[in-house]
Image (cartoon, rainbow, N blue to C red; front, side, top):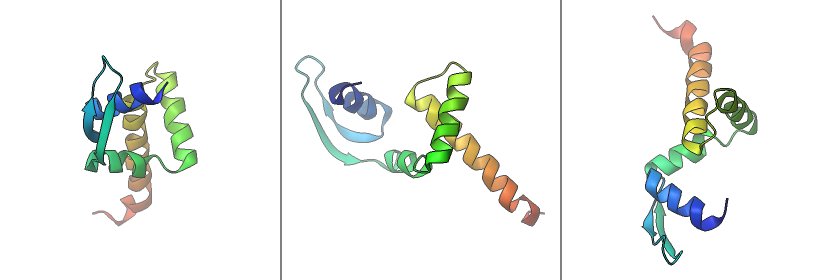
Length: 88
């Protein structure tokens, strides 16, 4: 996937704040959004990222959004496993 497509898609997803002109291929990235920071933070663990990609691929969902949702599910499950015993 080239940088233009990835950047425009990330702007459309709300992970980047910016502008994308699909006709000319020009794009301007102003900043990383809070949702973009969440994406990076939740997928920076290589093991979790690999597990999320495998989960998404097994479910035939190979978009970054789908992989991110899988990663969030894995994070929730891990948190529940680690702190569940402390919850009433």
